[in-house]
Image (tube, rainbow, N blue to C red; front, side, top):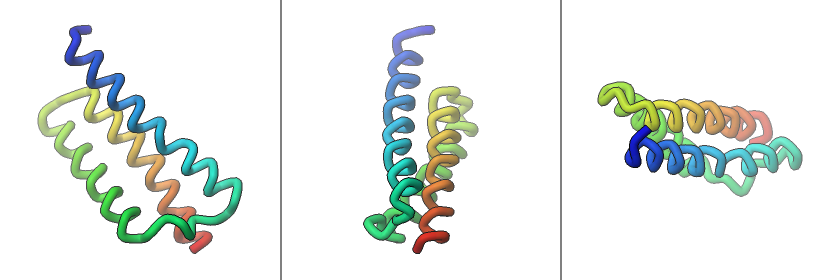
Amino acid sequence: MDGAMILGVTAGTLTTVAFIPQLAKALKSKSTGDLSWGMVLTFTIGVLLWLIYGIWIDSLPVILANAVTLLLQLGIVSLKIKYG
């Protein structure tokens, strides 16, 4: 694994893992009122586009990070719908 790949995997891991505390907090508190729909939807669409881009350029770090982030974000969207 070269330096660029290590950097990409590290960056993707950190930015993806950052969503776990938010999802855990929403599950625990059963509240997503602090999250605006504008941010949630804009971010979700952005992550989906990053995933498509990663597939297009065949970049494993971009694909993995954004696929996992999209799953976590869809969890937040579903909780926003459920508790909203």
